[in-house]
Image (cartoon, rainbow, N blue to C red; front, side):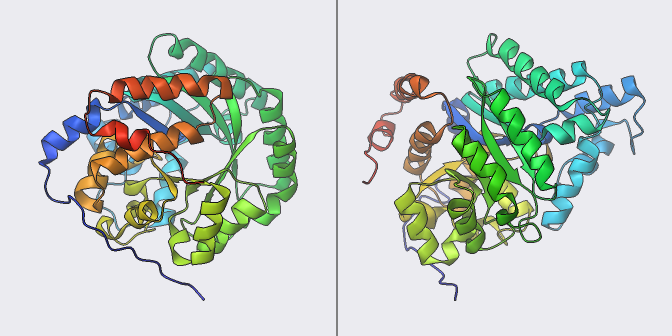
Length: 373
């Protein structure tokens, strides 16, 4: 039986002007652990690639195209949200297009003062438009990241994503790629898609191979399905992080599992509303998850689809959800410790954020707080 967990708390909700709060959020050094490359296309780039490669679109006018790509004022729905990707995945038409989209995703993150970014992508989805070899797509991604990292302050790593609706054989192919290219840039694998119809247990063997090869593991769970999906991601697939995971709040045993295993949640508030995972932002359980001392981080998911930035997500988390600034600082520390960055780089990332956060007098107490043992 589900056990609904609620935590009483006082918040600063409603005490911040939206403009000043957004300015504060934008100025902060940030980390985004959950961002899909396929959900990070600029509308202007989409229109330009379509024109160059003769791709039919409902319109080539950016504003008229917006509803086909972005989740505007539609009724929240998981499947309607995923429908946007059918159009977005048509634009990986050449090496140049793939690398341009990747480069711009990192530049957009850098412009939002994101200091560390993890971009996840599905090699099969990117290769499908022109039937590219999967290894070529991964190499193009690595090359693009190496180039753009040299121009920005944003350290970027890659996660190879497996679709839940794909075959186990396809999953094995992606794990093979992740193992072959495992290094400073390719850091792990992800499982994403409709968890209700495609349970984690199907992918037990490929994920076991990934763990044996020391790849990091993150799994989308507890978004469209309930807390048992979160449990399966941890116990069957060995997830170190959970994408979304918010429905863990429905079961105290799963909360205990996440706490004891020190599993990090990659929460994406706006996306969670748009997919219908929460009925409205004021009812988002992230506040309760923080108060239960879970390792919560705040992320964007799909900036282009949700029409959001990480600055927006921080502001929404305070104004609409009810977090306090101290929760944002804590989420940053959680993100540092959960990042799939090479271990020798973690102290540098931690110190970099610590130095930048020193400008905010109230921040370091939370950022430096020890994790519960």
